[in-house]
Length: 168
Image 1 (cartoon, rainbow, N blue to C red):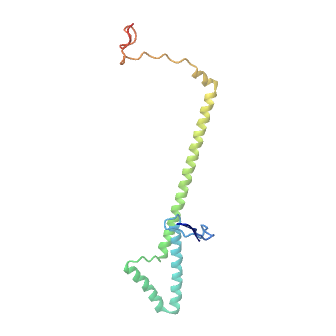
Image 2 (cartoon, rainbow, N blue to C red; image 1 turned 60 degrees about the vertical axis):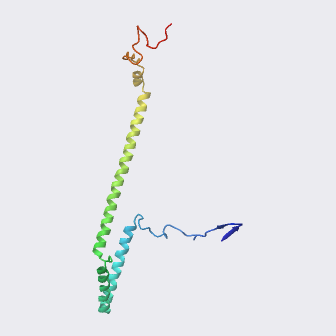
Image 3 (cartoon, helix red, strand yellow; image 1 turned 90 degrees about the horizontal axis):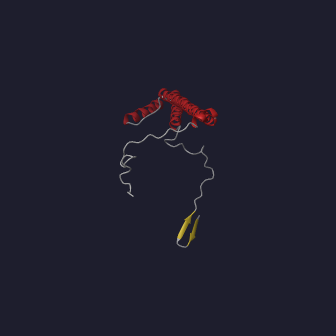
């Protein structure tokens, strides 16, 4: 729908009502997309294997032609990812990597919470010490007398006085 107000036109876009995350396509670099791609490739490879087995039973020529298609694709430089063993191995490696990362992340979180608890315990202990009368006496000790500082720009204190002192 376009709304015309003089020399300016405003356009209103109508989007589909259902835009749930389940229906959205997984992005190329979205978390979990590589795993999903590997699983899809494995599923397609298994379906292809089953179809080839059926073709071999009915027509050996068609099955051989299908196999030659993949061989020609590889020869031209295209990647044909239909090796089930390699795909399964890749999926298993991804799962092991994810398990390891999850374990490591759990350890990191546990260490952080432990450090927080230790800091909080130390803080409460220090606050108790501050309010404890035994430690309060220590704070009431008389301050030490300041030591005479060495000669500076103004000269020595005492007999002669300061160099720039106004004379009376």
